[in-house]
Length: 139
Image (cartoon, rainbow, N blue to C red; front, side):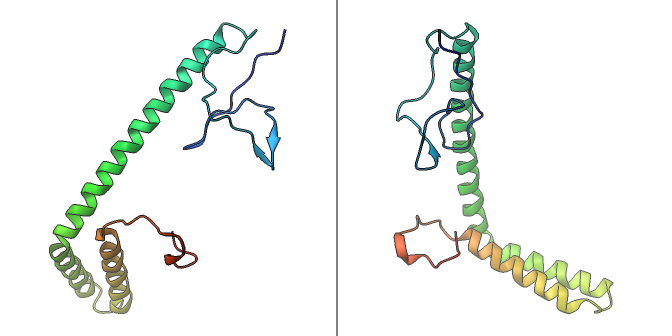
């Protein structure tokens, strides 16, 4: 009777791999089929564990889908209200500059500039990368 396979937690987008699985090219061998279901000769808990892994994967996929929708909506709102957000950042910078007596105006200006640049980048529609068009070192 073969020992029951133990499963390690999966990383995002990876399939559960039995501990001690064969390695090909330095990476764990991953079947194109999910490793769900009872292992022949395994204890009765393996079926239950496989069912839990499947439910966890479904939950993780749904959470990722909802997070993507929320990010898309946040991008839309940032693009729609970019001018208002910029005005609020300028107002906050003026308040801070006034309260510090101009002592940190260069740092405040740098921070506001970086915040605006980040907002502009975030508000841009996300295009899928197309091979070599993307500069090296950027995601």
